[in-house]
Length: 250
Image (cartoon, rainbow, N blue to C red):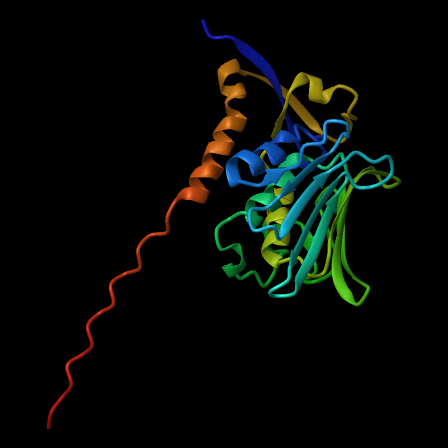
């Protein structure tokens, strides 16, 4: 008989708690080839993309964001960064890193990052403010240092913020849209019993589900395998060029 373990299914996902950081860090390192430094005396993780243009830092801070994703491309002059507080669900951060490591992500054109929110029934003004149906998540786009930036806040109560996320003005819209898509996704996220201890349970729906222990243990390896396959797969061959039309003689 297979061993079963209990997992919590929590919605809305943006109030589910942080989850396992490996969902982001291990996936980047093992699935997409990001290198990491080795500093066993410091409680931090630093990952760098294969092209050396992007860097992810995970470092606990008391009153500052734990996650910092930055990008600098000397050839194109592209510079941007995003930050996430420690209580930001890893599924939301992973949506951004997955989009960033998608082959040719820059080729994807996104004109309205708020479209996933409106499709999910959120109030969203193009290039302005947005709000979740339960009013627990609010966001705005504002001017800072001469550029338009995004700031998103999740709260349990009006004066009780849970986490903040911030995207600088140069962040590719495809990454912002990926975050919005994950933010508005109605699918519950899974948490272990240990990951629910001490986390506020008001304003959320939580139900327990028994799952095979093997299936739970394979969730992260399966994710890493999927990302690795995506990275190593070759694009389909271009369709053959049709021969030129014969010239007409008169």
